Structure formats: structure tokens, C-alpha cells
Image 1: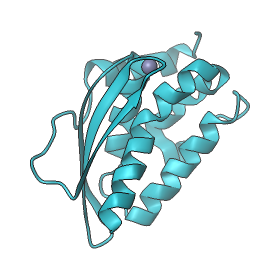
Image 2 (image 1 turned 90 degrees about the vertical axis):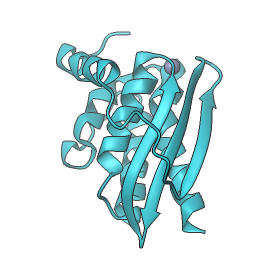
Image 3 (image 1 turned 45 degrees about the vertical axis):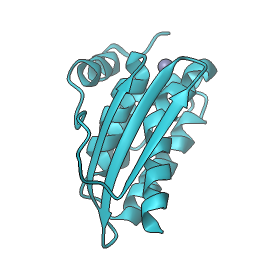
Length: 144
Ligand code: ZN
């Protein structure tokens, strides 16, 4: 898999120094998601209060794409309104289904655009989406 080298560095950096990787004791919802095709696994906690994503923490094992992507997603969601956060997840999902034709909006996705190239590799898209889908699942559970 070949990705732009600058982007590769962003991914590697998140993989080596993952953000918010340490499950908090306080959460409004906890989910466990797996990507059996690659063996990626994450547990993700969200704390959502009054429509605001106050915290996202996680633990996981798996390939560099899945772990870096979860780090990027967690960091991006914290401080957003639930609505903004879900829109951001949709924007990332759209990027992942673009088959390499889209670069992603850096204003919205920040480091997430580093994963744009993954959309050319169908086998790895689930790796990239794992953390984002876990967040969405947890966020929708917290809403109840
Ligand atoms: Zn993977």
C-alpha cells in the first residue's frame, strides 16, 4: 500500500503516540468493535453531556491504520457538539468510499485527510473506519 509520504508520517506518528488511548472510568457509553478481516479490535468510551462530546478514550490492538485512525477520530471528536461530531463521521465515511478520488476536507477532518489514500484499498477501509464507527455507535447509545 502506497500513501503519500507526508501522510504516512502522520499515520505513523498517531500509531506510535496514540492520543486519548487510556480508557477513562467515566463514560456515558462504551462499545467494543472488531474488524475480523484484519484482527483490529478497539474498546471506546465516550462521555457526552448536554449534546457535547466531553471526552473520548479508547484501548485497542491492530494494524497501524486502525490504531492511528482511532487516535485521529478521538482527538477530533472531543469538544464538538454531538451533531458536529456525527457530521464529521459522515464526512470521513464519504471519503473512505471515494476510491481515491477525494482528498478530504482538512478543515473538517484535520489529520483524518492523511487516511484519504486508504480509500483506494478496499481491504483496508474497514481498518480506517473502525474507530469512527465505534464512536458513532457509542454516541448514538449515549443519546438514549
Ligand atoms: Zn487493520
